[in-house]
Image (cartoon, rainbow, N blue to C red; front, side, top):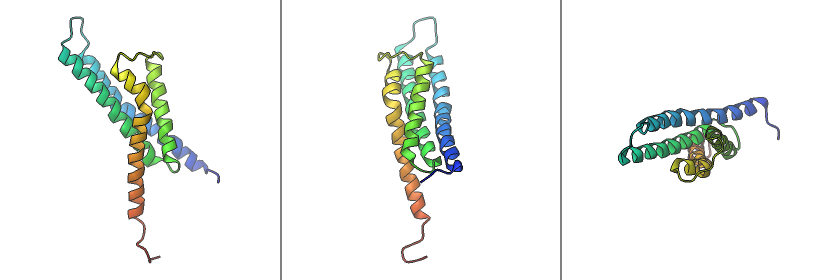
Length: 144
């Protein structure tokens, strides 16, 4: 069972697309959340809480849609490609944070411990949608 070159390229591009979709969602939300708390004076607790919630929401939404996109584009072994997307997102997050591991910040905890499972949940959703879409296009039983 060999992979044709087209499938290899499409599966690679599915991971790239999943990572890009996740980053397109995560980066603007993260920048906005950072601008909320960027100040030289004391920051109100409500703004700090809103910023943390935006970061958490952005990470979860980006990971779900990244995994979903990866699975919808891949040809075979969909969840393996979603797992690879989660690994790439975790690595990119660690790279941006200089590989620091600080559990005091909720977004860091979700990122390191949660990127892969959340991407996999998005992948499972995409796989189910993919399966139901392919079943609805098949012919009814007894017809050629």
